[in-house]
Length: 230
Length: 345
Ligand SMILES: Nc1ncnc2c1ncn2[C@@H]1O[C@H](COP(=O)(O)OP(=O)(O)O)[C@@H](O)[C@H]1O
Ligand SMILES: [Mg+2]
Picture (cartoon, rainbow over the protein chains, first blue to last red):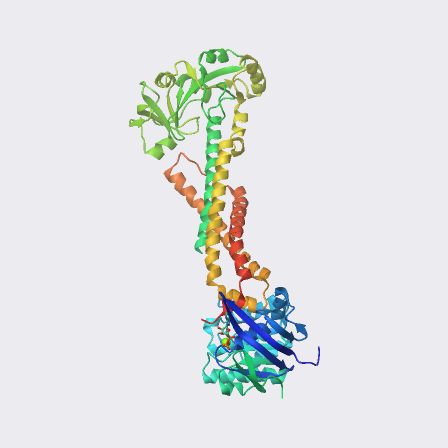
């Protein structure tokens, strides 16, 4: 483990080719995040927030620039390397929960461990997380029997079960009412404060953004404010 | 679920075909034994199953004078379409070899167009003694219904059938009864010297030849059906997996976002396919009991047996075809882009 930033990007660009047209989703992002930080990202629709997450999480390769996560160079990474990154280094939480509908909550969490090749019972740290999330009694239910707030908490549990270096949450409260939003946001803050989980969270809601230590503003594929820790 | 049924149908198809083939061969073997003869002399150039070729009934007299031979029955087989045929017999000599029919209804021939049928034929065609039935070779009066198990399902008088089929003085097969079955080998050896052109078998030898493997046409037919079954299974699973993969784009995207490798995704789909094919196979095996019931009820002349030794083979065929069908959709799913799959709608 290095003492340097866990995320470090320089002039990061991503250009999608749609038919014959090039769409520049990221036009040179400079970003630095320290281990243990909780960072909120805000910005108008289409400003490249999700694209940034997809690159940070290894779902798609960047086009140019430099990007290092936990010491790994993502620009040089193969598809297999990005798969390994998703498996061990990052955890995703999405707006639409994205639980597997045919599996129980417990199995949704278990399959993430199975994919990562982890056998045996979840460790004590994870049991503590389950208690923190307050879903330990609801784990045998299928997603459709759970409320939105419960589903999102299961999704968070799934994202952190393998103890990823960073948790990427893309509008995690976008589909939730105020009560559930607050619960989920408090959980994220607890994960960050008690376990030192590094978290990046995209949100549209300025109040939600206040939960982070720092707010990054994006516009037109660039970070316009808050690009490095104060 | 529907594709499990389709896989089941495919397994049933193969098992029923094999079951019917084997059942009919066993029935044929049984009826061959039922003649009671130790030795069978066929016409020169005749094949095991077909009844082509014939030879003069003068040989019957020659055969009868051989040492150890106590009775000889010459028969003429006239096919009348499908799997049916009428066997011409001389009732006196046939009884001498076979020990005589057991009549369930009516009695022996009295007039030239009299026909004796066995109980299986009678049941299958709701025929009784006294009925007039029309066959491709003319009108017949059913004079008796006998217990099945002796050579044929329909019998007419030998000379009548010889006249009718313009085979005067000809027979297709001669059945020889010996004083002691122990003499079978030596008598056959003698006969082969005297009748070098005629295939001569012991009944046991003939019966042992009545297996699927020794009848090339049947074997080929079974292969054709198996190939068809594989194709059907492949197509059904291919189509259902293809749509399943499209429907589950999002789920596959989730797995990939969690770090699943293409092999992991493919593994899940192939495991599901195997489960489906196994369920289908079990269903198919159960359904053969249904086809057996239907065939034995509505087509009693075709005997279907259950063939447990083919269960693993038919299942393996079904599972193989299903996995083959799942491979392309599975690979497509495994290579699918996670972002597109998760794209908010
Ligand atoms: N897979 C893709 N293919 C083509 N264009 C894309 C793709 N993903 C995003 N974009 C484009 O990139 C830009 C940034 O999108 P996105 O990162 O989703 O923004 P945000 O999350 O801030 O709303 C948009 O113009 C969007 O249309
Ligand atoms: Mg977005």
